[in-house]
Image 1 (cartoon, one colour):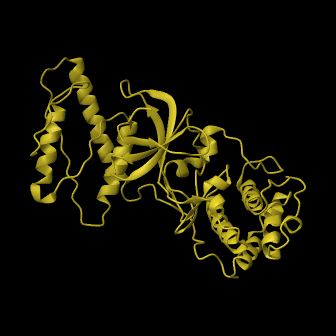
Image 2 (tube, one colour):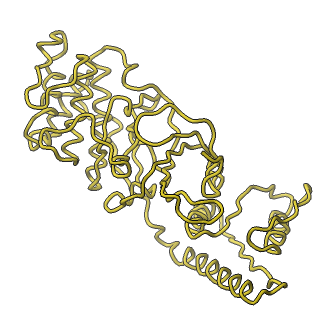
Image 3 (tube, rainbow, N blue to C red):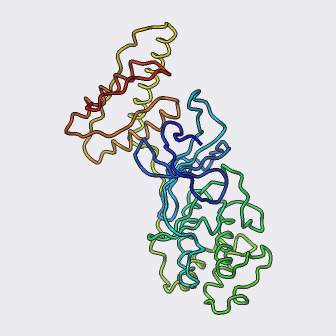
Length: 357
C-alpha cells in the first residue's frame, strides 16, 4: 500500500484488526490529526448511511468516522476501485479483557445500548457488532466500525433469527455479545440456553436483560426502557447511564454554504483557465488568485477550510495545507509557496522553496 492516499492521508504502520480490508495508522495532512484509515476493495453505497460515512455523526460511545472516499490513482486521478474510511484512533481493550464481573458487563451493555439507540434515532444501524468491536476506554465503551458492513458486504457474526439487518438486529447482536462473554458460548438463535443454567451466580436482572435482547420476536427486543432498567440494576444503579446522550449530526455547513460555494466556484474558474491555457499551449500562465479568509476567533475558519479542502480533493484539485508562525507574516510565506506552485504545470516539479520562506 502506498504511503500517501489521495494526497491527504499519510499511512503509517498496519494495525491488527477484525473485518475486511487493510487498516493503517495514519495522519490527516489536511488537519494534522492522527487517525486510522481502512482500505476496502469496494465502492460505497451511501444511501441512508451518508451522514455516517461523511463523518457527520457524533456520539460519545461511537467511534467517529472522519470521512470516506474513493481511493484515487495518484498519477491519473481516477478511481482505483478501492474505498477508504478514515476514523478517529481509539485506544483501549476489547471486550475480552473485561473482568468476569456482572456489574462491569452490565455497564458495558448500557454504553453499547446508548450507542445503538443513537444510531437508530438517525435511521442507521451498525450491522456487524462483535466483541472485538466493543472497545473499553477510560471514558467508557466505544462501538467500532459503524456502517462498515454497507461497504464490505461482511456477514454478521450474530445473525438475528428474522434474517434482517437493522436496528433490532443490532440489539440481538448486543445480547449475543453479552451472552458469549458471560458463558463462552454463542447463543442458539432460536432456543438459547438461559444464563441461569450456565452461570447461576449471575444476578437475575442481567439474565433477564440478555434474554430480552435475544428474543426471537424483534418487537420484544425493542422494549428498551425495560432492558435499560435491568442493566442499570445489574450494574448497581437503577439510574440511567450517565453517558446516555442524544446523537448529533453536524449540520451541512449551515450559514457557510455560500462561502463554501464561492471557494468551489473559484476552484472551477481556476481549473477552466488552466485547461484553456494548456489547450492554447500558453507559455505564460496568468496570475494566481489569492483569497484570504479573515474572521474572529471561534468562527470556525480551520474547520471551514478543512471541509473546502476535502471537497476540492474529491474533484482532483491539488490542495496544499500547512502551518506557519503568525509572527513571521503567514500570508507572505504562503504567497511565495503558491506562486512557485502556480508557475508550473501539471506533472512538473517546482523548485524547493527557501527554508526561510
